[in-house]
Length: 315
Image (cartoon, rainbow, N blue to C red):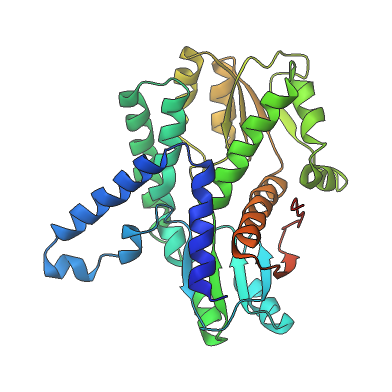
């Protein structure tokens, strides 16, 4: 299989967990096409045409050697050291989860998915849009000075195909966690911890002394209405907690949360559980890899590294 086909299957699989319908995603892409057509020739020169087909711009192909993809190094973070390791292992593709290159610079553009999750949970559209637009601007400014292309340059010099799939996998784990906790009918926060530890990726991480952690509330607090924040690129706007309180959210579940946001959640009497980041990302990537293998009919030789725990759920 060629990289372009592999990547296309992965992007399409990410729609399975997207809070937007396929019709809404197509409208999103069509709006991009209309804006592109309205640009001057000079402006079009600087427009990334991937935006016309890919709704998840923190996922990208950074370098394509043209080789068939059979042996893949998969890691959560794929920086220069992972590129060198992958080259030594003789793989055909290094597949990262977290973005590098232009995918990192465009991380702020996937926050729109967080906006849709907020609206889906009952937040008025105008409030969700303002919260997310503020965070988008903040994140874009923060990424502006990054030395973003180091890993990409290394892959090019070694003629090693390099891509990442970020929000694509995060969409899948976000939906998985929502469905899983609904099925388990969790009642107290301690029930969430117990249930999540039954998932293989979290079980393995717990054996290394890293478990889901209640950072606001106690294990005896009742769960109530849950908001799972695993997708949307990164952490949201800290102002969201007062609005989540207003729509009846009792428990907020995430992979990581800055200290100032934990304090905001406590002020709003919202319980917070932080799931182990690498285990959560591994779960999402595993769900994605399973879908790619199923839809392609190919069993890839996958080498797990850089925090990735490979667990296949294929039957």
